[in-house]
Length: 199
Image 1 (cartoon, helix red, strand yellow):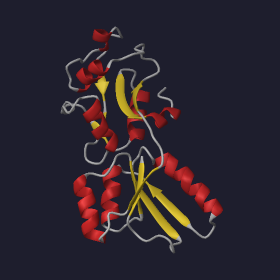
Image 2 (cartoon, rainbow, N blue to C red):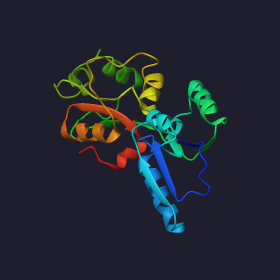
Image 3 (cartoon, rainbow, N blue to C red):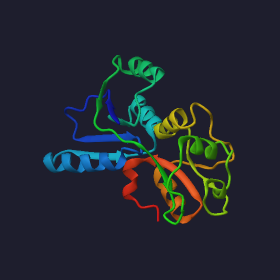
């Protein structure tokens, strides 16, 4: 997880942070503590995905982009063109990908191959994996902005695309809520979101 900044913020009493939903709760906690220690500073934290944070930094609407992945070469190039600098990047923490299942689902272990086949629509019933005779309801993050989505594609699907019939949502919170309400659902997101129980 990275914090990237190109704007001058040393003398600002208002700081805006936007980007990775993976980092949203962490950024809120960090901002709260910073404001306690610096009462004259206001920090506004927003999510929306890594790409949205990068775009907000590029159009000068935020001072800090929160990213759950390293910036892409074309993003670094645009940063240099916009600001005559690529800014500063700080690694502030590490997270892990987590697979979310409803607490009533009797499946406890899935291999990477099984996950890949679920999200490529090659396995479509929990019975095929030793579970209930129910259709599998996968849900995905939107490809447009999510660093978590890109990580899932690269490391779980080995570069293959998620099946087009699988719905996608903009935030991890939406995935958690979907899994919480559907016994046969499966989703993915950051490990830190496990504090929100999928019950």
